[in-house]
Amino acid sequence: MSGRAQLMWDEAVTGYDFGRDHPMDPVRLGLTRKLVGAFELDQHMDVVAAQPAGESTLRLVHREDYIAAVKAASADPRAADQSYGLGTLDDPAFAGMHEVSALIAGQSVGAAEAVWRGSALHAVNFTGGLHHAMPAGASGFCIYNDAALAIARLLELGAERVAYVDVDVHHGDGVQAAFWEDPRVLTISLHEHPRTLFPQTGWPQETGAAEGSAVNVALPAGTGDEGWLRAFHAVVPELLADFSPQVLVTQHGADTHFEDPLAHLAVSLDAQRAVQVACHDLAHEHAGGKWLALGGGGYAVVEVVPRSWTHLVAIAAGRPIEPTTPVPESWRQEVYARTRQLGPARMTDGRWPVAWADWESGYDPADRLDQAVLATRKAVFPLRGLLP
Image 1 (cartoon, rainbow, N blue to C red):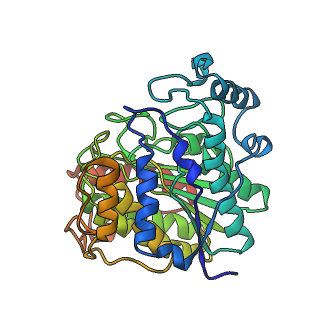
Image 2: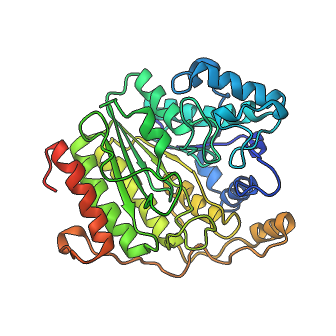
């Protein structure tokens, strides 16, 4: 097995563009790639551009009629069929939509193949993590569900146990739906409570048709670093230890951040980095190091997303960046040239190291965060033979 990590990148992914005023601004992808280069992380990884996912691969998750509808909207955006979620405010149709969506999906599928076959121990596709797309519909800025497609491809290649951990602020509903009845896949999602955020799913009682194969931690709006890390460590490590996945797939939407305009958690860049480190370590503890890391949401496109995902790439590459490290001036100049905004000066929000109390230290029945964690543990752990 190669000791080098693999970074999936094709400049054409920046064509995933819903239009000028849409929150999913592709500048976040280009700026992340530039920051990765500014830190010379790409010198320590194999940078690979995979082929777009073909129709037979897309059909591992998506219905044939939906793929046809995406192709039709891609050829003529005015003909988008809204019954498939296309041509809506969230998912406007645009020319070439099928091609670029298939390209992003192909990067995640190619990364999964590399990790499974051993040509890379870790692989990162920060352009992926489009976890809301359903088998028969677009949703939440997502056309094809690359995360689900990567997992489906791992199963096709012979994997018997794949764990998926999603820390995006929004529930990983599309991935959960794709594997709701499949005990070979354990899906874990930590997200803002469905009472206060799209897609209004991800309640603790959603545990899958396969006896605890779906896990949902619904966090109260306003949850910050300490609570977010406490919830992660109170649920994820114990479940992964029990499940013993052969591959760990993680989704790292940066929209949990306190500056994100579309959600209501209060997590810092430093806590996001701490969870990225934890996912890396858990992959080595429970999955033989086989780790596929994806991007996801994130709409503070200059201040947060590039730094968060550059930390992710650096961790996967075995070259973690100290949080207090200055951001390269060349990148800040790139930011200004592209956006006329001033880029951040350091790779931290000033909260490193992040402190949190582990679950074993005690439970406060009056604390809303602890109530959320306990609701998940009570709903899922007994189904898996674990004590809540």
